[in-house]
Structure formats: C-alpha cells, structure tokens
Length: 142
Image (tube, rainbow, N blue to C red; front, side, top):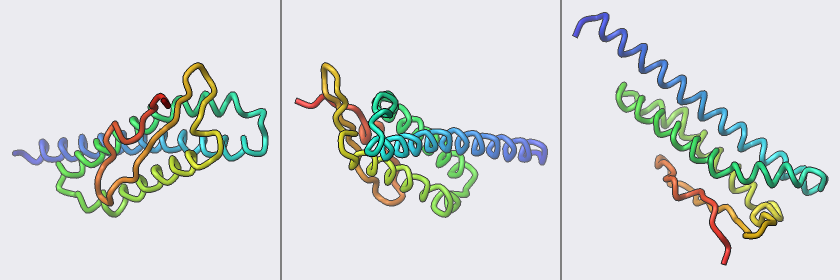
C-alpha cells in the first residue's frame, strides 16, 4: 500500500470517528435536555407538554446514541486503537445510561398520559459492552 493510500485511510477513519462522536454527543445533549425538563417539571407543571413530547423521542435518541457509539467502536477497532474507546468513549456510554436512569426515576416520567400508557425501560450495560436496540424502548403497559 502506498503512503498516500495509508494517509487517505487514516484521514477517512479520523473523519468517520469525528462524525460518529459528534452525532453521538448531539443525541446525548438532547437526552440531558430531557432530564433538565423532567427535573423542572417536578417544580413547574407548565412544562408537562414539552416533557411528554421529549420523552416520546427518548427511544429514538438512545438508538441514535447507541448506533453512533457502535460506529465509533468500529472505526477505532479498524484503526487498531480500541484502547481509545475504553479511555474516552466508554464513560460517555455510562453517562448516557445514568441520565436515562435519572429520567426514569422522576415521578410521572414513566407514565405518559394517552390512550395507551407508555413507559421507557432501560437496562444498565456491562462495562465495555454496547447497548442493544432492545435495551431502551417504549412498551405498552398491560
């Protein structure tokens, strides 16, 4: 492989990693905003409609976060820099899960008033493992 090709591969990996981390961080900021609104809703009931709308998007945000984190891991593995994931990115996953758990602990965030009550279920990840798409999803409460 020529030096130019190696450099292009490196540049492509760096761009892919930056894109994945940026998209992941945007999703995490949105998840954190839901927590802020949920905490404020306990004090200010006027925010309830905004909270309900944001909670409905939580599943999509978690899926986006997980997909981008998986892309991040793939790029780092391809570049033989998996240690960087453990050092930098794994804590971001723990932060996202902690935020989702805090949202679910706030009263009335699990039950959304509508024809069907919904709740959001999430499970803690094992250290170093990614969340699957089934680990955070809306389900109908029987």
